[in-house]
Length: 89
Image (spheres, rainbow, N blue to C red):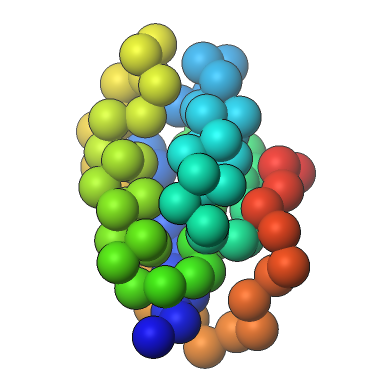
């Protein structure tokens, strides 16, 4: 079953390769979507794919790359068309 979720990751997540690491993890899991910095210092991630793969990426978002310090991950389900690949904005 294909699902899409949009997550906002809060904490020390900009300037620590969070987006690039998320892209690498998503591609390994076969998840499409994007990762982008938000003006408030958080990162937004759209993740679309098989439910188990998206759930695995959501779990990974809580740790992120070694230099990150994740304080919170807030996700909501979306009914949007899945992008063809994973990109960084």
